[in-house]
Length: 184
Image (tube, rainbow, N blue to C red; front, side, top):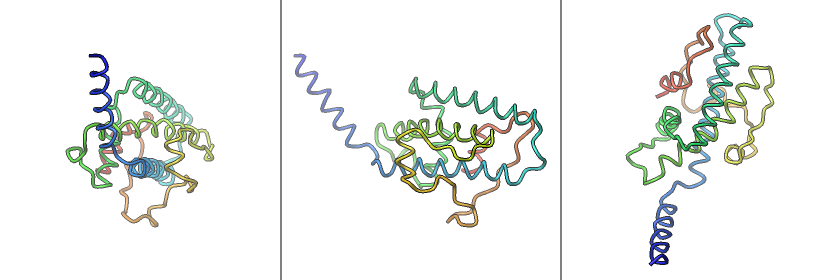
């Protein structure tokens, strides 16, 4: 009886694996997320209303440290809900709808977004300290970028124009989910 249960369970795993998104599709979504986030950060930096005070810098650094810890915790717990705003943005940009995805595919996207967000937040934190040479550590993001420059494409070179996000508030900046809403 146990062999029968094991066989049926393994068949279910093979069926689920066959319906997952391709590695290339996940890589494309992760790369888009990475480049979009860095483009937003570049806009925030290149079009400030005023130079950042030391207090603004500290608040933004603390915010990024807190957000990084939250993303790691969410990935550790498979709490894919934390990735919903970013997943919805990259899916919309790729003309994917949650209803069109097979079982597990939406979670596959959200897990990839969580993994990438850890490296992205680490890069934003490094930029906050003046280091613009941060390299991703996660294999998924490294493969997605595939030797291409990690520097985002400037809006004048992009295929679709991007809206300029609103400037950050003095309390440490807007939440990522608020910025993501502007790109829907």
